[in-house]
Length: 339
Image (cartoon, rainbow, N blue to C red; front, side):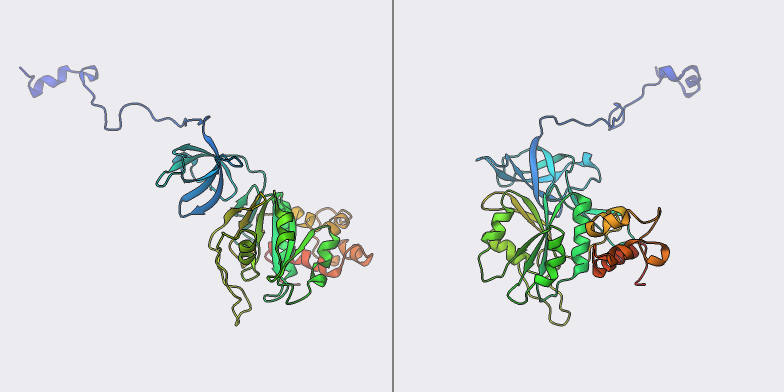
């Protein structure tokens, strides 16, 4: 006979049977599988939450695998060039899907921020060896300010910069590239009606990022380097003199003679808010030595504030144009306009 309601006072908590919830009674843990046996992959494309990776890279069994990111990675971003660990179906068969469970330490990074005063960085490409700064000799006109920004991004991220001038049939780039040649930066040139063999030989065996404004011919160059790439190309918009965006995402393509070339979307701006001011100065080697003579705490903005760089330029170690470019970058980082 079941007890009456008045008899419940005779029971204590030890008599109560607790039913487990739907999720079970085992406590949650933050420990995650180590995935020691995860297969090595190399990210070559990112598209709306799906990642294309090369596995068994450099072997006869090399193949591309479609992957998704494991939840355990949290908010860690996966970008083109990342070396990752994969589990699941890595056969590469149609309809197969693997999971990215690990992102290996990055050796180099190409980063940008929204603007020069925003310190939040966005990684564009990882583990590239060279940053190929692509500029047109004309249509659109090359800009030293952009090249100098790209040099800062390259040095800060551990990449070797290269300057590639396209459309040299429209204008002679000799005067534009002269200051960079003096700094020891490799200079490549190309016109669309000539062979791309010289550039292909230089890039062979490297993992290079092509980076530049829209309309300078990056995708046209990629199509010449990798004939089956079929990257979309476009012309310069006549009213603005600026290029139209043709590439919407970064993608790594295998070169015929080995190595990878990474085509990136054309950029309007390259924010350096994440770069320390000392790294900005270091990207101007012709001025960095003179900056060592400046007083402690010097922001290198003007001679009136005690900066030694004006005297350094007057002694012939650099040019007024280079000093002006450095100061423009430093002032922009501080949110200051032109003096």
